Length: 229
Image (cartoon, rainbow, N blue to C red):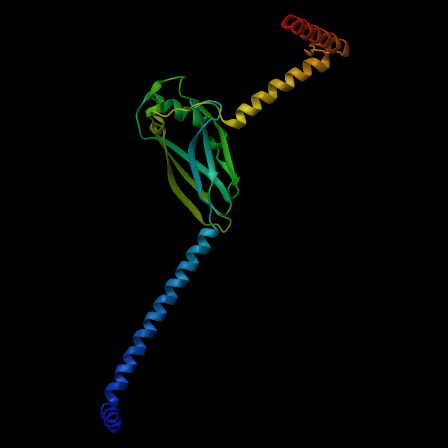
């Protein structure tokens, strides 16, 4: 114990300098971690208060060759004054057809004033079995520009690549669409009956029919019994 105290007294200056260095390093590390946490908190808050516009195609439920154009705000904040500039990356006749169709839509020609978080705008775009067949090989770029509620502006491109549909197919019909068709047919049948333009096909089985069938069955049993005797 005496030797330890003597060592500490002899090297007190060096030990103080060492401890000061350790405290300084710890303070620097703590300050860096605090700054990193503040930066991540700021980024998280920014993500929670900024919009994000996504433009893509959507395959119609009615038929796989019918395509809708979809504009969706996948961000967590509303988007204002949304404008689009469309250009083709492929130089094909089908690409020009797709561009012409988009520019006939008011949403692409004049833009959209507002899209809330998760809100979507969509419209029928094209049929892949009509017009030039090179549409399925087309690749378009939609440059989007918009602003948030805080006044921040955003610009980014969205790639719309129809070549992703090559080789795709669909079996059967979506269940909801099939149910809707059956309900529509049922509603037509009910309307015909209630309006008098059609009659319901009903098989009526009366008590007399039951008695007659029972009598025939009893006579058959008696005949079989006598024949067996």
